[in-house]
Length: 150
Image 1 (cartoon, rainbow, N blue to C red):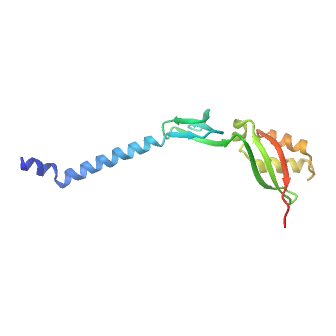
Image 2: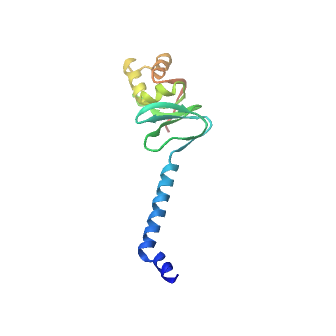
Image 3: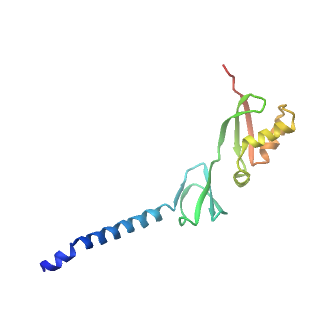
């Protein structure tokens, strides 16, 4: 009986048991990384091997790690962003994402859309054309406010 306990608690056995426990913990942690939580008012874009699968709203989701990933996570309410206009004016842009897929896959580059708008309008502010430029990347324009510099 003493021989059995001694062989059970020998150094190679302890190392093997420790290695098995570490591997099992690693696998468990890896599998837990597949859980994705989407908060209320947000939306997540899920891709499988860089191909769009679905948009997920408020709840817990599970997707197998490595194959699936959360490619985008966006707030659906009114967003604001401080921007530098090409004419040197600082402004705060208020907008709402109306087409999440278009916004995500167009690169969600608001700065490029505004720069393109300014280039096409010879640096003049025309709200209707700015709305069209932002609509082209899936954004609903709300307001733009100039920030006073001291």
